[in-house]
Amino acid sequence: MKESTIMKIHYGTALASVGLVAVHILMRLTTGFSDSLSYENVLANYQSIPYVIMLELILILLAVHGFNGLRVILLELKQGRVYEKAVSYGCVVGMIVLIGYGSNTIIQTNMGMI
Amino acid sequence: MAQVSSIAEEQATTPLSASKSVLLRISRFNPETDESNKFMEFSVPYQKWTTVLEAILDVKKHFDHSVAVRYSCRQATCGSCGMLINGKPRLACFTKISELNSNVVTVEPMNNFPVIRDLAVKFERLFDTHQKIKPYLIRDDTELESDEKEFLQSPEELENFIQFANCIKCGLCNSACPTMTTDSSFVGPQALAQAYRYVADSRDKGKDSRLDIIDESHGIWRCHFAGSCSQVCPKGVDPAMGIQFLRGYLLGFRS
Ligand code: HEM
Ligand code: SF4
Ligand code: FES
Image (cartoon, rainbow over all chains, first blue to last red):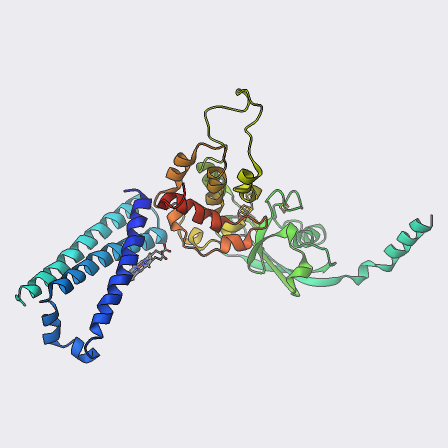
């Protein structure tokens, strides 16, 4: 992929994340802070489909943004053909694994399996 | 006759002893024999107009001829004499000791360039990256063959790029750039500013090929807006601005 395409995605995911994370934090403020993290409340949140979709979106956006950010940082830290290939593929794999693991948690919780 | 004698009198009233002196600390390092650099200190007389380069040459003439320094034009034109002066990348021939407001002047080789010896550094990386962005007009016809004698350009079209054409390849911007320090493959502010200089030239037709060259993993995107390049440029080039304009083309804000 062209670097400019990757960076367009990077800036796009960054801006979208800022918006969605703000909504996410504002929703946490509807209950008191300690209540917000109580076990029942957390589970209950996962029953609301719009909320679950938002969590999944934040997960994807930040996994893509975060791992690309990490790739950029690592590419600037050290150079070399093999190292750079390892960093690029490693970050794509990390991204997929994180999205897979997070989605699995979200889906299982939503379906009441946890 | 009266005028001549008054000039003579005037010269007589400014004796050399009126000059002050400054402690000049010169970084000495030979990568072939030394583990690290050492500073040698010299007390050098200076006048209001004495430049740091003149002070270094004074040391070479009177104290230690082996100090290695590169210079040529002595008028901020050739781009040879870049060095760190009291920690900041500057041209030695374009920096007066009096403007530094310090009793101590420390000169070191530029950052982000391998040292040959003392203050002289290798320019290969700068020349390579400069060459890589194709620093010439790209088009199929030439001024020699076409009917028109020259490719005409309006003052407005010239205005688009002329400040970038002032670059003297001194490398001060590359020396100030934090990304240049960590990323040994980064193309750097000097080459990026020159990429913009040609992309913005109405006579040039090589925009796409040049944008392709800088759109890679160690290209333009590794600039993080530190802006130190533009602060140190002695010729008024603003590489940081050129980089943002180039980004504009790549992100679709400019065409
Ligand atoms: C997961 C960890 C994260 C990493 C490793 C990371 C890394 C990066 C990197 C390397 C850049 C590029 C900076 C540059 O080009 O100078 C960047 C830009 C950006 N990031 Fe992140 N980021 C992370 C999380 C976040 C989060 C949680 C948000 C907001 C909700 C965010 C918002 C932004 C924004 C708005 C930009 C664009 C500004 C810029 O390019 O400097 N990032 N990020
Ligand atoms: S842009 Fe300025 S600082 Fe950089 S090489 Fe050219 S003249 Fe020197
Ligand atoms: S000696 Fe030429 S720029 Fe300083």
